Length: 364
Image (cartoon, rainbow, N blue to C red):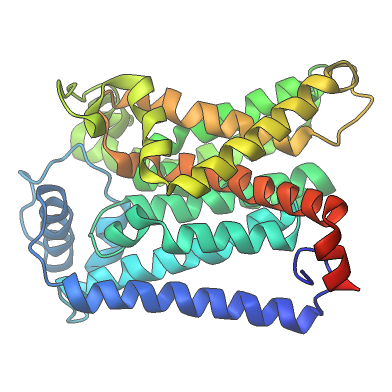
C-alpha cells in the first residue's frame, strides 16, 4: 500500500530497485549455468564465426555478409583476449539485465517510479527475455540501445534539454547499427512530433541536429560497407524485405497481424488483462480530451499517445520489413505493452484505494 500510495521513503525505493536488478541478474545466471552450454543456433553460429574471423583476421566471406557487424566486432574483443562462446553469452546477460534497469528509468520518467518498478519486474520475468538472454543474438543489445533512445527522447520532450536529444540520437543510431530494424525509431519520433507539434516541429533546431547526429554516427559503418561491398547502404539493401513468409503455426503467422499476436501469446494472462486495462484507460483519456489535445490546450496525455504509437508501430514495421514472424523480434513492442500493464495495475489499485472500505480501514 505504501508503495502504490507514494509513501515509501527514497531509501526504500532504491532498495526495491537494487533487489529487482539482483533478482533479474540471478534469474539470468540461473539460465546461463543450467542451459548456457546448449549448441549454437544457425544465426548464433554466424555471429560467433564472424566475431572469431575479426578477432584472428580470418576469412569471413561466407558468413552471412548481409547481417549486422557491430556486435560481432564487440564480441571479437573478448575472443581476442582469450574468451570463448560462454564468455560471449555473459555479455547477453549483461545487456538483458541492463534493459531491466533502463526500462525502470523509462517508466519512472514517463509515469512514476512505481510504474517503472513494475515495468522492470515484468521484463525481468518475461519468458522470452530469459530464454534469449543466453543466446548469442542481436535482440538484447539492440533493445538496450532502443530503450535508452526512447528514455532520452522522452526526457528531452519533457525538459527541452538539448543534451537529451543528442543522447537519444546517438542511442538511436547505435540501435539501428546493431540490428537495422530499429530504423522505425526515426519514424516514430518524427510522427509523434508531427502529431504533438504540427506547426513547429520542422523548425526545431534540436530535431535537425539530432538527425545530423544520427547520420554522422552512421558514417563509419557506411564507409565500411562501401569499401567492403561497394555500396554504402549494403546492410539495408540486403536485409529489408528479404524475409520469406512461414505458412503455418501461431508463432509464424504472416505479417503485421502475426506480430500483434505475439503480445497476447507471450504474456501471462493476468498481465495481458492489465495491459488491456491500461491501454483502454489511455485511449479513453485521449478520446475524451481529443479536442483539447488537438488544439494543444493540454499536454497531459502526450506520453500515453507516444506509447500508443510505439505499441502500434513496432508490429507494423516488423510486418512490412521482416514478413515472417519470430516472437523475439517483438522485444521492443513488449516495452509499451509492459507500460500499459503497469499503468493499468496502478489505475486499478488507485480505484481500490478510493472505493474499498476494508482497505481504507486497514490503512487507518
